[in-house]
Length: 328
Image (cartoon, rainbow, N blue to C red):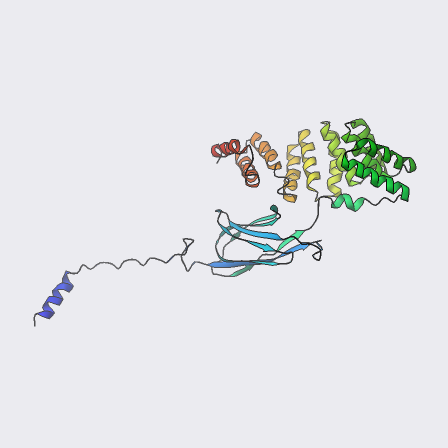
């Protein structure tokens, strides 16, 4: 009869309190296992590309704004990417081609429950040389065409004297050859004869006012002479003719800066970066300088960060990191 008494006493002596809280189980990302997680997918669409001859591969990269990477997926044009198990948050979707960034998009993923989300990527395939090639349509005699081709080969090889002689022969036969005038301007530009180069470009544009190579090179010539105001008009026309040409946008921005039109220059500098993110990485420095002088330290810091992300081995890295430390 004593056993029940002992058991009862033990029960009475056991401390009684509120139940211990149940800890939610968490995943590797530190979020509760029952938190929404999503699948992001989409097609990589590239307009204007001949997929039968294109042999290179794009890479689609997804990162969270915290820096966490969710992987890199190699894709051919028209392929489909898919990223799984994504928590809510801010993301950056990047497309690369041969280690150069060609597309970047930031977005927020926030859904109350796990779901599949489609986000197609659309690119337009245009090379920097597209505008120049599209307009080279001048018809010459067989002999003039042969001399013109020999002249361009001489120009490429650095034989400027021979290139000049051949182009003048072409123009002696046909003074209306605006393409030959443009090439002659480039030859004279490289021979450091700016007055002769200017005359040749002016002749070309008098014959064909929207000829992109002449417009672009005349703008370059004016910039090299610090004739910023004279550079604006041909470069503005160049951008109208070929709005997707990164270099034309960049040079127009520089010309506008030269005449103290910073607010007009910024959109063209930003367009140059958008059109050629890697090739125009140095333009971030130009924008950062503008913002810093205007007292916009946060925007300047943003441009410096983007520059260092694209040029991690820059010799100015220590200097720029000090700026970022002082202007977080």
